[in-house]
Length: 472
Image 1 (cartoon, helix red, strand yellow):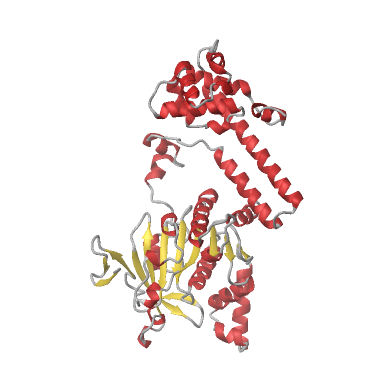
Image 2: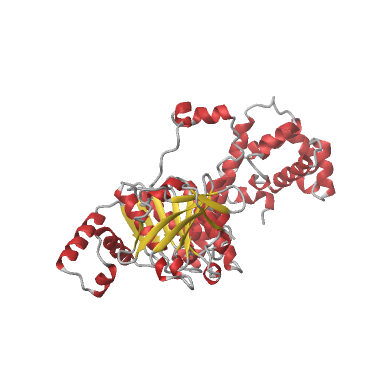
């Protein structure tokens, strides 16, 4: 039975013991180098158990602000009963004995880190092979888990703590100083000018959440945004966990062709309407638009689908309908914890693909029962949705609440409840239930159609000076 220290060597895993010894010895010669080393590697990156213990005790000495040398390190190991297992003081002396002048330390640290990454990748693959051979899980779940593990290992390769001065940031910005001073490009525009004035488009790598109660128009809004973006040449991917792909296309075609969706469902279209629908479908068929209607998709599966599609086509916008129907690979006692993991994964995916992610979400019943506009705390199983999102938009239709008057029929408000880099406010729209689409209201088309928050009291004031609603 090989010793624990010899395990990596016995298995033939990637190891460079000389690099490990050089890194540890360099710190013993000059302990000011520890911060430089610890910013890239950690104790688990060493292949030998005694090297892991040595680096771990170095870390504790550094955190207490004490010097790191042969004697202090030997004493720290002795206190934890580990000096003998690290081959005593003689081994510590051998680490820095005869070392040349410290140079090229970064290269040795990188070697240690890279070997550790390779070992983790090999172990992750071996575990996957074992589970595949034992048929312990569903094949799709196994592949999702394997991809997640490898992605996490790949992310660990990136060196953290890359601090840059303002001059360096500006110098490295594409186009230099002049480009840095220009306003960012408008991003992907929504179909509604009032909304665009507030959020200035969907920008990478934003996580944008559109939330509403069921039946208020989340999916209709998402279909409109997808149609508008794809028509402008943006590659759009829709992950629909609720509606089938055929239903999405039918809804988009009715909205685009101006065809009554209810008459379509009843099979009562006349010849003119059928031609309009056919023309709309022909136009949609030419768009850079792809739909995945697999139910219960996970974040790793979503990422894998996007990655495969990007091999052949550019992807500029990802739409998920909707958040609470996604599944998480991990086991959590509470659904809130699962949603937290999912929203965090979506935010990281948006950053990794450098594309805006538009995610639909449901609200709880509070705003409906209390007959008020929704607020951020109404996000159902919100978890970290508020924290991870860059923009949160609520869709509110007053007529759908209890006590809504007939005069409110079709009135809709897009409430920008959160915007990380811009104002909050609301946009007044009209919902055309016949065509399943939101439209600019005729009475505000020639005016500023949005309101902005005042700095105090939660009260709003629109562009024409009239006071509006409060959040409370």
